[in-house]
Image 1 (spheres, one colour):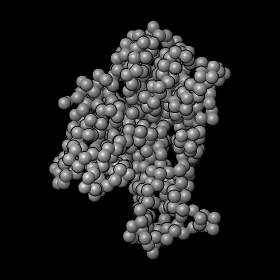
Image 2: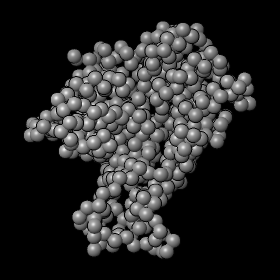
Image 3: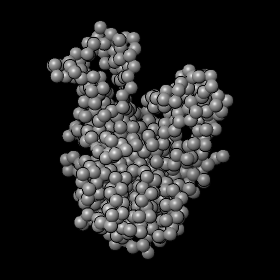
Length: 504
C-alpha cells in the first residue's frame, strides 16, 4: 500500500501545468529544428524561426509559449494499492477530480506566471469565464500497482477545433481519408505540429486514443532509420511522408513540413466497424508525464537552454515598415500577398465574444460603447495573457481568423475597419469581401505569442471589460511582425503557397 498525500498530488498538478506553459518538450524542439534546417520556402522558414525563438524566450523568462494556455487535459492511471492521505477533514471530501481542479486553479492563477483563463461555463448559454481555467478534462483508469501515473496537456482551442472522427467501413482506406481531410482543416491548428490518430474501439474510444497518442514523444526520424516493424509503424511512415507532400507547410504558407510526427494508438473493434479519430497538436505542443510513488511532489527536470538551436530572429532588410495611425485605403493597395510588414501605431483588438456584442448592438440600432471607433483602423484577433511585472501585456499571439468570417461584412460595412490581423486562412466569401472593399488581411505567426507581445508598448481596455481576455483592447505597437495573407485584390497566400509546394 502506497500513501500519497493529496497536497503532493495537487502541487504536482499545479507545478506541471506551469512547467509546460513555458517549456516545449525537447523532442518537439529538436524536430522543429530539423524542419527549420530542411525548409526551402523562405516564408515558412521564417515562421518556423519565429516559433523556435519564441520557444527559447519563454523557457528563459518563464512566460507562456502561446496566449492560449489551453484547456487542461489529464490522464491518470491510479494503482489499486494507492491510498490518499488528506491534511484535514475539509479536504478529505475532495474527489480525485477535485484535486486535479485545485492543481489547475493554482497553476493558472500563479501570480509569478499568470496563465490565461479560457474555460467557459454554460457553453450554449451565457458562456461565462470561470476565471481560473477549471474544470479540467480528466480521464481516469484504475490499474494494478501502487503508484499514480499522470499525463497532462494544455490543449489550445485552435488545434482542438480541427478534431475529426469518421466511422469507416472495414475495407476503407485510412490514408485516403486523412489526405482528403487534412487540407480541409486549414491552418487554424498552427502547423507544423503533430497528428494523433486513434483507430478502433468505438467512436468515443477512438477520440480518446487520438488525444492520448499526442502525449508520446516525437520519434519519426528514428523510425525512418530503423524501418517499420508493425502495421501501425508502416501507417505512421506513410502518412508522415504523404501529409508533408501536400505542401501545406508551416502556418499553411506552403512548404516542406506540415507535420513533425504522426502518432497512432489502436484498440480492438467490432467486426463491422473501423472508427478513426484524428486530433492535431499545434506549434504550442505542451505536455509532460510523471509518476507519484508516495515520496513527495513530482520532480520535473527543466531542460537546459543549450537544447535550443542558436538562432535569432530579425526582420528582413526589405521588410516594409508601416505606421498604421496614418494609413489609408490607398496606401494598402500597394501591399502584396506574401509580403512582410512591421506595424507601428495603435490597433484595436476583438475576437468572438466582442464581435458578437458589436453585432447585437448594431442589430438593436444602438451605438458602440463610448470611445470605441473602428473607422479606418486595424483590428487584431487576440485574447492576451494578463501582464506581469513591467509588461505592457502578456503573450498576445493571434487567434484563428476564420471564426470571425461571419462578422466580416458587418465590420467592413457598419464599423469601417480597413485591416484585420489574425492567423490562418479566410473563407471564399470573406476573401471576396476583402477584394470588394479593398481592405487587407494580415497574419502574425501562431506559436510566437511572447515574441509578438514584445512589440506591444502599451495596452488599455476600451470596451466590454466583463469579457476578460475577450475584451476590446487598444494596443500601441512598435515594429509588430506580420505578413500580408490576403491583399486588396483578393490574392491569398494560403491558396497560392500550398499549391506551389504540393508534390502530388
